[in-house]
Length: 339
Image (cartoon, rainbow, N blue to C red):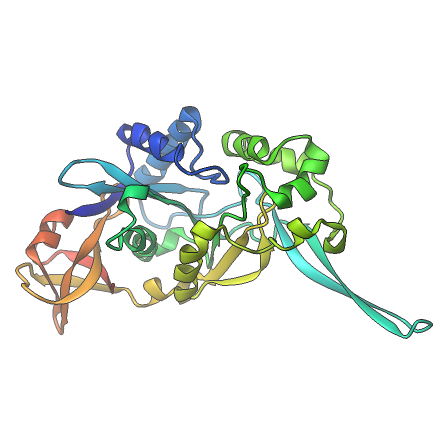
């Protein structure tokens, strides 16, 4: 089967909604709410349409989908945010320590604390990645994830100097969050699912209004809450490894809802951005070559797929199937990274 990454359109609302219902909660960027998804697609459409030179860095959203080109079905999605924390504050907890010493007791005590911050405002973000459960084979998750970096490379001027990726935290069998129950639930009178859904639909201003501003000593939390801080959901461990392979790292920032880790990287140090080749197509009839991700086009015309490539002194040779999927001919420019 042939799959392509392309820009999402309003016609993708229904498949996105159907996938959103499969996420199992804790997935703020893909809420099972038609109005919210419609607003996302409208905002993405405005971002895709914003073109020109010398663009100021803005709070843009790009929504991409994975399409089976043989059936026309949408089977996955991902999102890119160019600059978070501009229209609404971007809140995180940062795990820090405070060391104190008593001369009388001859004892030094180190306390771990969670501090509410806006440190990551201005970063770009890769998020909203979801692959239909029936398609989790054949490297499609990797295609979804890494195609975002080729998009960034092709539109580097629209993204910040740092990129973050939030991983979903630990959620129990009931759909609740031990972390939320220990902190947020004490102040908001809402379950994790209620707070998560409200945030996805209405934004997180209510966090600024009601969340305690003083540091939270982790020693005062339940054991269940302490042991999940900074841990990804079991379904997100592979995503965490992929991020680490791209030079992202965990720097002590966690999600304010479920305590999941926030991964950070310098944009120009992300492996798939740093190693991306931007070269002209010199041959579209390659029969055998290195497996690679190949992308072409800008903004709403961006497309990315797996293909065979051979890098040459004067450009790149690709297989005919990839050329057809990307709608490129000899002389066109493409971006590419090894699979």
